Image (cartoon, rainbow, N blue to C red):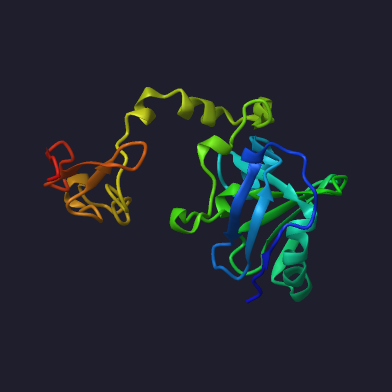
Length: 223
């Protein structure tokens, strides 16, 4: 496995809060990894176009723009070895992905000599090591959703659904039932977690269930 840690080599003229102390990422199987210090976060775009939806298997795909001179030297050995594969999805861009696990790794616009785009789902987070992004790094004057006109109809329905917003947030597998399509009564299929632990939007523990078949029966955890 090739891994690299690089220091800044180019001058920058950007707000200090857009310089990330440490940014790291990997594919799912970790055959491709990268680790950079003092990274300029030039822009964040959340793309809703059909190509990105199909490539990622998600309703949208957020990208972070970083300097090509910082990231490309780290990725080149993976490309030469065949670890990173590529697909030219249009005349404008090439998408690179891991040849083993197929995770998206980088998006390369052919006419952007200074920039590479990182799928943000590949970013690692470790607050203890100072790795990752936080909301203060986002700037509504610079960052945005793009191709919102191409947003899937079902995404709009999901985002506007009061039912979706009311669904419980669970730790780990939570209310997930293994093989939920099996021909049994729903109540007789156990959840993967017992008891189930619920969290708020920030991940703080709220309550636990005492009966995995009835999430309405809950107890408050001891402080």
